Amino acid sequence: MYDICCVGHITLDKVVTPRAVAHMAGGTSFYFSNAICNMDVNYTLVTTLAQSEMVVVEKMRAKGIKVNASVGGLSVYFENIYSENQDHRTQRVLQKANPFTVEQLQQIDAKIFHLGPLLADDMPVELIKELHSRGRVSLDVQGYLRKVEGTNVVAVDWADKREALRYVDILKANEYETEVLTGSNDIFEGARILADWGVKEVVLTLGSMGSVIYTDGVFYNIPAYTPTAVVDATGCGDTYMAGYLYQRIKGSSFQQAGEFAAAMASFKIESSGPFTGTEEDVMNLLESGVKVYSY
Image (cartoon, rainbow, N blue to C red; front, top):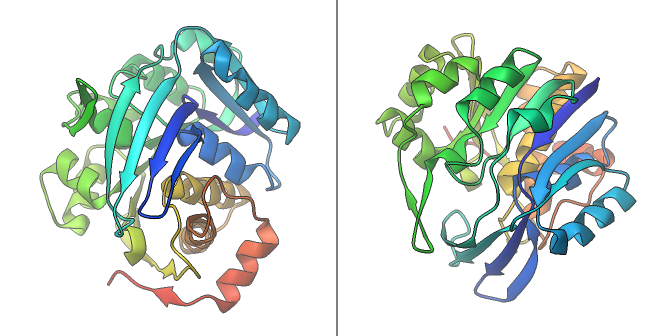
């Protein structure tokens, strides 16, 4: 029995910023796994990728990350283009991978399954239902709101949201994704709507303005921690969720879990690539960091 199992594709990423162009592995599963691997938690990753990218899996295993990899087809290839404002990006998808199946998870037991679809057809609703019957389901909703037209990524609503969200215990979304899902540009109203649809913990990330957690009718205001430099925001949301779920598994309060997660995300944005810090680093930032609240 694992504490946390993340499910998602490892991608090929081309990251373009005003300062540099970098090619690297990516995807929710990659950033989440690297962020949580230095924490005291029993963790595994379930992923699908092309044989040509198995070198990435071997490097992750060398760090001590337990990876269940299905090899076949193509790997997802993303191009992320950032302006000076790192809260916003333009994306293209140059190739897609095979979707996940219920069969791939049959032998995996976990207290929390964290799902990181990158595109709308990555994970069927049946997979969410199956995992909900065996543990708590955490979902980063961004992939369900992405449709590929040619190579361009366009925002769409999630057709199966009302059915699927009944089986989602923890939902992570940003303010734009929340508006697409609920039709409301008010994050508080949006959070209440998502809760009415069945989500137990609504986690809304607001970039440099912090985050909001809504559960049992209570809002928790989570500050952002001002980074020493803004280098690359790719993977910040995944790093946040790694910290949040780690703290929730440990029994921390919603406020404590959110602040720990925010501090991890602040560390990550200071460099290109995944989070490489320790729990001690995060705790030090919680004590000394400059906080920015969303409201």
